Length: 390
Image (tube, rainbow, N blue to C red; front, side, top):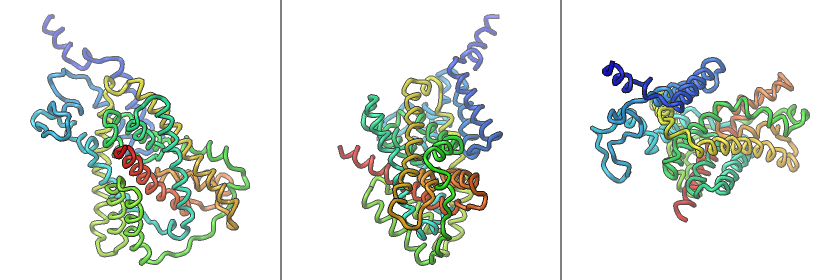
């Protein structure tokens, strides 16, 4: 009996704490949302299962968690690979900011900037939506977070998981887990969070506005754009160099017409593999002992506020532009300024067609949507430059 009792103490049942059980249930909820509701299944399913894996208790001497990095926490010191857990090796791609640039490479290879180039004023909607980032930084500072932590938390408002992971790995690695989960959770909940805000801030007449057909963009413009945009954006915000470099490099692979095989690999096999590893590793980092803290709850609250403000900022700025424009913009397009590609653009299409089933807004919504991807990366670069230089 003593032997059985000792064995039970070494099992997950004997080591289970209430927090671990809570996180396992949350992981199951994420999987349910992915399968039943089809909410960002490519993200929520790996994250949800990773949460379950990361919260199975084990003896400390077994070194199985993502935090077992061989006893070396200083990135400037060599890590003892033999003492690292396999999960820690996978998590290194998150911790050291490797996965986000690869995700951006794939996004660039699958993105068509033609709609944005045909109607450049829609770029302003993507820029306006970044107001949520900077207001949330101020809110985080008010709540007592230090400057670096506040900068990392604020980027959640951009609704761009890879950007949030990249910036928090630079500024606030201790908050990387909750920030990543918050960013991806709100990306998945775009169809739930955005429509009420969009309807509250617009009239039916505004939601019925139809957009003119975009002009055809030449191949020369599409080739010049990634080079010119990269130079302009990174000269303004050098901190965005890695993310935007990979984004526009991927787009150049696509648009050049001479590297289709590379572009195809980047937007299919490569981005799929990285998404699987990133989602699973982020989920596995949510060990209850590390994750269920007051700080995490504050981050989730600030993230939700940031995302709501970003959505409202894009919609209100579109209404502001209409005061000066002869050809009015449908204000719903402003909600696509957050960079949850392409879900926020689909939400714009959905809300618009609830008023007029013949109103096609999806193509137009992709313009502020991809501009939001660029805008969130620039915002991250600005925050990183300011905070590192301060």
